[in-house]
Image (cartoon, rainbow over all chains, first blue to last red; front, top):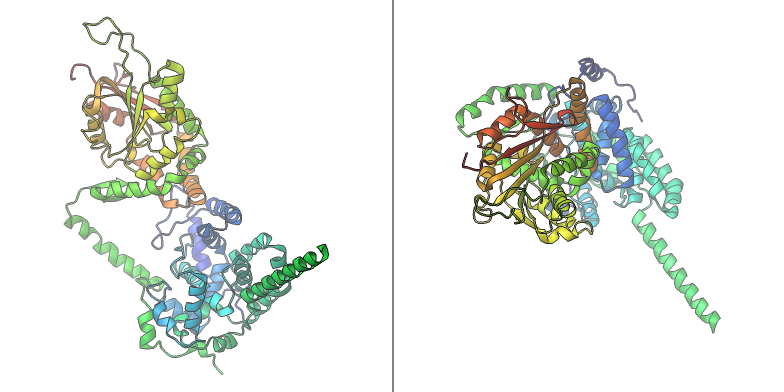
Length: 283
Length: 333
């Protein structure tokens, strides 16, 4: 395992510092680096970090604020580290050169459903169908100043569903928290770590499962495996998913849906048994 | 052994799946933006379409009303909450003062005409333009009923945006506003061309527009429509954001507008761009004196102008908002 922690050439950091030296304010923003870009001052960025963290904790349906939290906490260091991790790998460099986007236009789900059963593409399409989500639900990155790093963030966001398919974790809160722990250990983005506060919203049984099983799984696998940001998903679609997992060094966690279903049935059976016993005893 | 991820070039099947995006590496994107800026002036010279401002953007005039409409459809549901947050509740004081200074429902001391001795007793017909969620309309009726004992004056609330009107209709069902509901009419119309069959010429006693006129494609057209529908002697009253005179207050106000308001819009309403448009539209609206001159050019008599040509408006909170009034002359101007 060879993880980049110190960026080799902080050119992007120098650019970032130079930008701050221009002393821009809300009344004097520099021109945008890409469409939709909004350069933020430090005060605005801090306000958005706090505001979006608090609001999305109390209203988890505000996916747009979770995205904002990710963008505003990614600088100064973390998104540059992730971009440099991409630059250090041949595939990562190709992704940065090609800039592929994952939307329902660029990924044809109909074609993916026709692929062999255990292929990455088929698992991804059936996961999307099972959870009832589409690849179009991702917001555009707006608050990252460096244009290439904005693409890295966008790519990370768009690949999130592939990570679900790779690990098999479902879209419910428990699965999302476990996946965020895995992403945090692998990409080191602060937003993934901050999202772990959502563990306070889990039920006691879910929380104990998280501490006992999923967090240890996430940390060991996230730290040990290769950088998942460097997977060129568009090229891996017809590959066997277990093959890809073996290559990346990821083991599947226990299937969360099956575990919950089994526990639910156990509880139901126990309840029926109790009622029958109670019925017998009252006679 | 080299990892397999670094495999061969994409197959034709995969090439179908990958769509190339316009910008690539940083140097390519710089070159692309330079070539775009070279070609950008040409479309503007080629088209002869009239343009207008949309905040700081220039857009074709024909598309302004639909873009403003989408801004207000987006903000309609959280409009009142956002007003409170953006102005820290001060907008309530402004609107209260605005309505109080108009004294709706009051009976004039003069007789209705030269032939009769009786004072005019017919109820007021008021038109509240861009009044979507009903803030001004409810205040007008409350003032008329509670302070002037007038229970028959009515208000036509007009807005171009149905989402705002429906938010207003919902508010009218709340217990504190329900008594006024029968005296309210909700009209979806464009203030620049009010339907003459519904709002006839010389039929309105009081025309109010609060924080709406800066969003119109042509505020001057709205002034001419106001002149058409008002009775002679009728009052045009406009409450709008304006220029702050004091420089220190202005510096604070601008930073609040351009810094805090888009962030509040993003956190509360989930829409940064609409609130960015709103603060930019405030910047673009004419200053107090210029706006007073437009009102006067539309044919209205502006009260409060002294012999040097100063005055004719009332600043609120140091000029953050301003009330402009005009009276349609009795004898055809």
